[in-house]
Length: 292
Image (tube, rainbow, N blue to C red; front, side, top):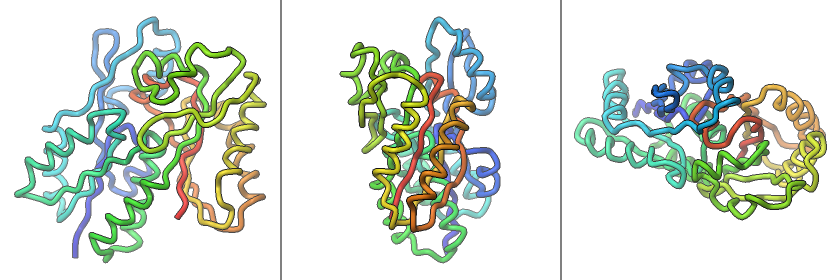
């Protein structure tokens, strides 16, 4: 029987208690500012980074792990008894992280079998995939390898993030704005609902007006409209503003409960770390979900 290890990167923004409980190996990316470099979620807390970026005049930069970092983790997994490794990472459209993982997997191919998965998503979408796959393996320890890979591909194809940002400035400056680029410089009283789908950020819908309560209500209505109430729902919430999260959560969860007939598995609230916050700015919140 295979013993499968799960590896991801820090842009998954998985809460520490889930990382520890599910024995997920997390390889940190790096954020650079003020003449120093910090490992995401290791050398700097999310709160400390939020305080910095709230007043920063220069946008921090980020960098992906080196292949050597992956090699060290893959070998550690083998030393702990793993026979196969699933290494699931941020969309290749947003970062070269999965490419680095593939290089490392090739370096250890004679030592252990590593399957590198491009999640086609990021932050709580990536975290949702990693956590639910880890939970599935725990619940089904004798799952066949090919069946597990097929399940991951199905989850990938169905994973979506719907979210709101205070501003598109960081996305534009960092070059991660994807298909939403045409919204930059548009009418000031339009606030777009954004989607991460098939690896990139794209506009989903425009909300006229910028009043917070109106935009939150519209996001909640949009989410309830696209989720099939008859199918099981796997989801999590992501945020880098705790106040916004609570308002959103208090509106969304009762709305979902009132409309759904099938079970909902909410794996938790994922606080967005320094690397992703660098590229989207503060004031972000939304939902990642998939249905099978």
